[in-house]
Image: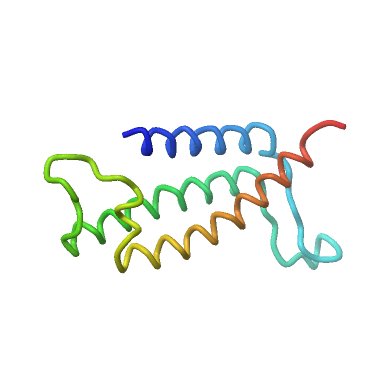
Amino acid sequence: CFEWFNVGVCLWWSARRVGKDCGSQIWVLGKNVPNQLWTLSGDVLAKACGGLYLGTLAVTAAAGLHQGYLPVTPGQLWMISDMWADPPGNWISRWSVVQGVHFGALAHIAVYLATPA
């Protein structure tokens, strides 16, 4: 259960920190506002990270239960790493970890830019 608690605390802290400190920060890709290609706010970033965290856990748990390799020990909550050891959970988790790193990098940039000098 510590692994699940740890992930939950990281999710809560990340979403709270980015949403609190960077909710009004907006990034624009393009030379000027009328020709912008996309925008991204801190609130959207926090929601995307949370959705990615929880969605990955839900999808890999459902896949493991459907494939029959979860639960490892009947009657016990499995570890997150058990969901990511066998296909399709291992390739779903690899994809989402890469996306999470991208979102995490943007979140760190957001916190940095929102911090007063």
